[in-house]
Length: 390
Image 1 (cartoon, rainbow, N blue to C red):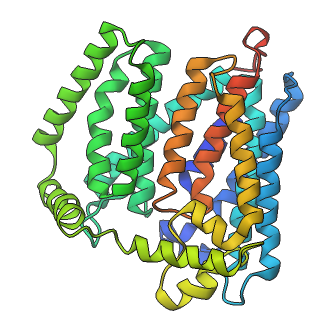
Image 2: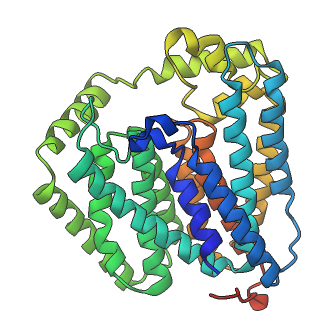
Image 3: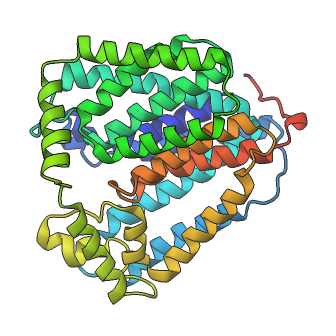
């Protein structure tokens, strides 16, 4: 039964989507995440009642993650007065429910869920890229995005499209998904998201380094073909703004001027806040409540520094415990090495991207892929449970 997975993934991709973004200003209070999650939980409840699910152990990583989310919610009790406690708590509650539900769903059939996930992200990346190039166009800074979201989130969807294309090729043997990668790369560059490109490059290089002894001639030929097609397609079909954006954003600002959008000052401020509140942090959204409200900075633009500043050693300890326990599970691949490796790559990419931009809710894709990777590693391959109404 694919319905719960489709709903959960659509909620995750859609992000914070209220109806004012669709032009219905009088219905700005309607949060489609809540509606989508309720529908997904109902479908998941029916799915759980119809099918059998394997019992797995070693779920300490999930317990630590949920305790981490609960600690962040509880930290609203000591947040500064200017902190936006309500929206932040809602984000964290929805994040916890989303991660738990997706992990529970993944346990039934990791192969089916992984394939469904990569298929949906592959399609989403195509839709987002076409919408950005042909409908939304460049924003005020000349950077592209789609459906009212920011360029950095848009770029994550595009790089996840690249990972999904590679995953579909490896899982099905079909080369067609690889031929769409040039579109994803073009859209990523047009987003102007330097942090996302760095994160994607790190994950790609690590994957090649790990697989260097197992690559077959056909795989190398396919990769070479994709690279040639990508460069040629980008050069031939890129809009005129591409050259200007690349020259200004990546050459002049990054290389010549070493401009980092003020990230270093923001990160230093978050580090100083951790020093001031080392034990339990300043409370959820404390960075905005104490610093950002006066400097028009929404959040620290670094997930780990945000946790340190607002959760202190307690928050960092719970986050570290979850990551370490999860790493022990997925290391080596478990029951499905290839599938686990692909989902780990997606997890690490989103996590690395979170070191350059994004807030707590923007980490949802990393947590979801982490749950899928854990399920792929833990569920015994020989005891695969069939999914009802597949």
